[in-house]
Image (cartoon, rainbow, N blue to C red; front, side, top):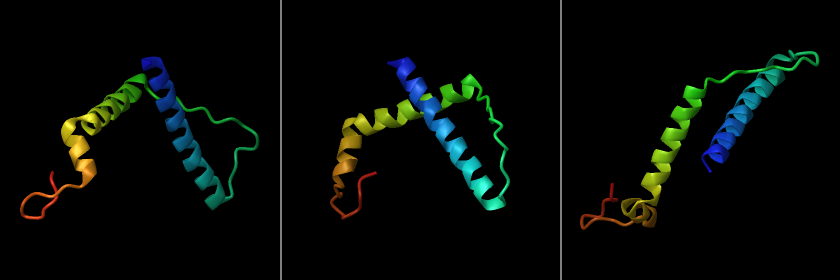
Length: 81
C-alpha cells in the first residue's frame, strides 16, 4: 500500500511538472526538438508530501472532520472550526 501511494504521488508530481512545461512551451513557442526532459525529485521531498497528505486524510477521517463535512453550526450560527 505504501509503495502504491508513493507511485501515485510521483505520478501527480510528474503530471504537474509536465503541465507547467506545456504552459511554458505554449506561451513562449519554444520546444525541446524531440529531446526528453528528465527531472529528478529528491525522495525526501516526496516523503514530506506523503506525510502531509496522510495528515490531511487522517484529519478528514476523524470524527470532527466528519462533523465539519456536515456544515453544522454552533448555537450562535457560526460554522464549527
